[in-house]
Image 1: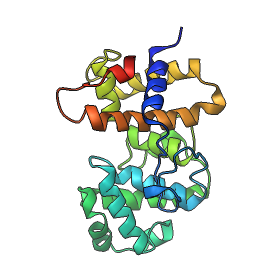
Image 2: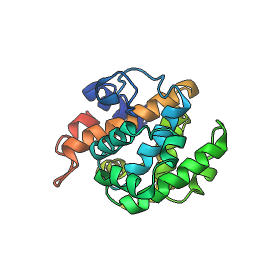
Image 3: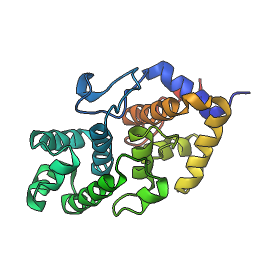
Image 4: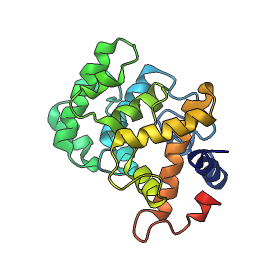
Length: 227
């Protein structure tokens, strides 16, 4: 019998189709979304941009992140060297749309130093978590979308939907929710396809939640998920 977690994924995919996350400034799709294509990121610079976006999107919307990344791009600061060339005040001004710009500026500098020291290697999750400003959700976003590693991203929308459906308890710990998702999907999805499914599933949760879980009452169209 198909695990309910995987059945929800299939229902969401039928309803919304491929989402094309993580959006990147250099991808040809509208707004940097690359729906149905899974070759991005294609360079170290694009991996770096995923990292910047993952930090900037903390406690804000990705539309705000788009504005900040566009401003950084205009200043040739979507590369490690370009970002480090910015003064703190300039960087704070450029990322102001994302909020918490004082903290996030520091986090971006810290991540950039860390990224340079990798010399192109793939970081471990533990190494990412040791960088100031990078928590579990941010680390998993960087690994899944930047380095194409099978790390499911748990965000507030994911927790809200799963809790409303009774699949997790309220305020479940991040690791417990991640274990539920990965355990269910590993039983249903071949290893070679997991990164694609993890990417799409996370993005599909966001697409659905923006429509039906942004304000109460939640789950107005849960029939989409459980049909």
